[in-house]
Length: 90
Image 1: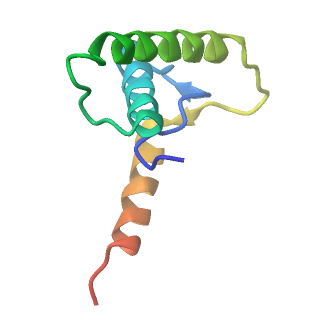
Image 2: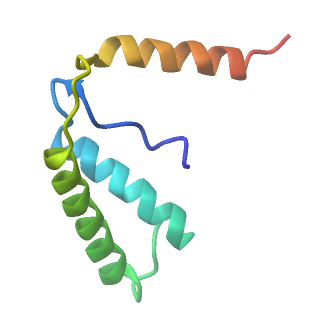
C-alpha cells in the first residue's frame, strides 16, 4: 500500500471530503503510474479520482465498529514517531 494513504475510518472527527479525495488521488496515481497525467489522459484520470472518492465515501458511511473512535492528533504523533525511527540517521 502507498505510504501516503492513511486509514480514514473510525476517527473523531470523521474524515473530511479533502482527506477522502487526497486518498483517492494517491490511489489513482499509484495504480496509473502517473503523478500528473498528460492532457490526453487528464479526463480519465480525474474521472477515476472522482469514482474512487465516491466509493470511499460510500464505504466509510457503511462501515460499523464497536471500537472507540481514534484521535487524529494521537495517530499523527504515532506516525511522526515511526517516521523518525525509520529515517533516523546514526
